[in-house]
Length: 225
Image 1 (cartoon, rainbow, N blue to C red):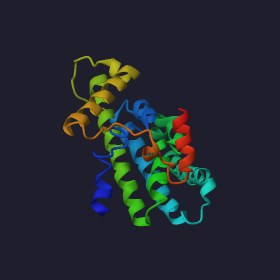
Image 2 (cartoon, helix red, strand yellow):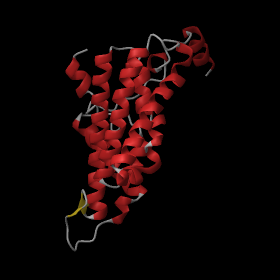
Image 3 (tube, rainbow, N blue to C red):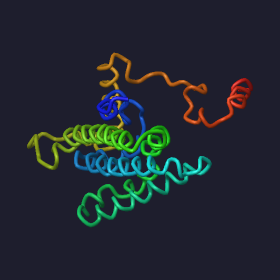
Image 4 (cartoon, one colour):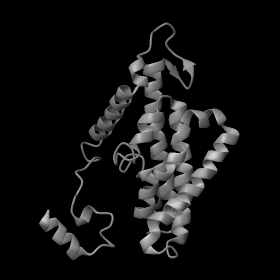
């Protein structure tokens, strides 16, 4: 695979938030401001890059049967480092993001890239994949946070924009988050002419475990279903 395409696919073609619809919980919860969105995105990207590299290095060492717990241990280690660095150098951001920094451990974007990419590719490609997916995640959260902050608080990165014009506070609440999220997804889908968000396959071809399971067992389960 071309090195540049590995990085760029995370922006539009396989954007983890707006196309794959992964990590929706932190996306909706922390994007009440552009600073929070970017802070969460950069923190996740740092963990994603480091975890991809380490998992790619250890892919031949980790036993297949316990690979998921091993991946989680690796991810948790880097999340702890990121959280301690935030507490030391950006305490205000750490307080604002709160519980969602530790919850990066169970972020399906990171575990998904470890399982689907890092465990099957070289160290360099895994690092590039982490950069691309991390940047796509960060940009999506940053844009969503900026839109919600402007409409819901009348500010951009804390700077007042509209003076006496009252903001629409609903955009700082859950309904506003879902509305902006839906608009961004619709925009991506429109720009790609419906090609970005595809119908998912529910057979063996669309299963992440297809390579390690017994195909005859899968066939029997599908037949009984």
